[in-house]
Length: 313
Ligand code: KDG
Image (tube, rainbow, N blue to C red; front, top):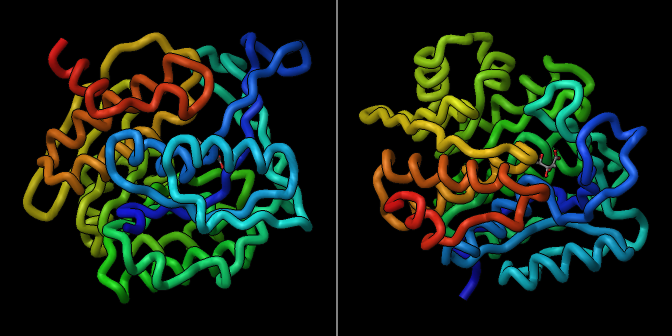
């Protein structure tokens, strides 16, 4: 049986600073597997659905590390290509500086294997067998061929009646300009069933800051479910006929990176399992909160039981 959820995007090796502060003074870094869509694929699998990942990694130690990790988590790796011409992308995480509660990502991924993703990596039969296809605003920003791959995957999902979820995840350093990001992402977003975004990305994409305007703006574009992540203020979700909100779970923040992917992976899993908008949002907030308590995006991704433990505590 093929995967129920398929994600497309760059897998990266993350070097997370063991100590806080400017990287020039950091001595030790911890190695983790990361990448927004990779994290979603691991999250979905940990919560009991079959998942698969479409990406390219280099023919190097980091590529081997990524494949070992996602295979170990039970994610289908049949669509991960090993590209001998380019390296696996990496990034460093600077924690708690200059903003104490935030982390900063410093990428070394230009020309990486995943930036060479091409439409030939997208197998329509593979996507057609899934219930949901997921990607983010990072993949179309990687290169023209990665953008074309995203478009092909989205068009295939639409044609085959596969649900699409999309996290806006605008990473300014990956775009030539914010106008380019908006012009590229809006046509993709108009085809999406479940949209994850946050106030910063929404104001770039829609030019509005008011939460209600954001929800209505994306619904008007044809998105079925809009989910607004508000960090320590929780989250909101809206469909044409329903609204839901969830409070954040107060936690100690070791590193906020990865919360959004745990949130998205949990929300889509929960919806695919038939849970209500409100319950899915609550579970997603819990998953996002757990991930920020440790360094690394994927180690603390919760199982369904781990989420239940927080609901019933
Ligand atoms: O959401 C966390 C991701 O941003 C992180 O793992 C790195 O995928 C990444 C990216 O491209 O920023």
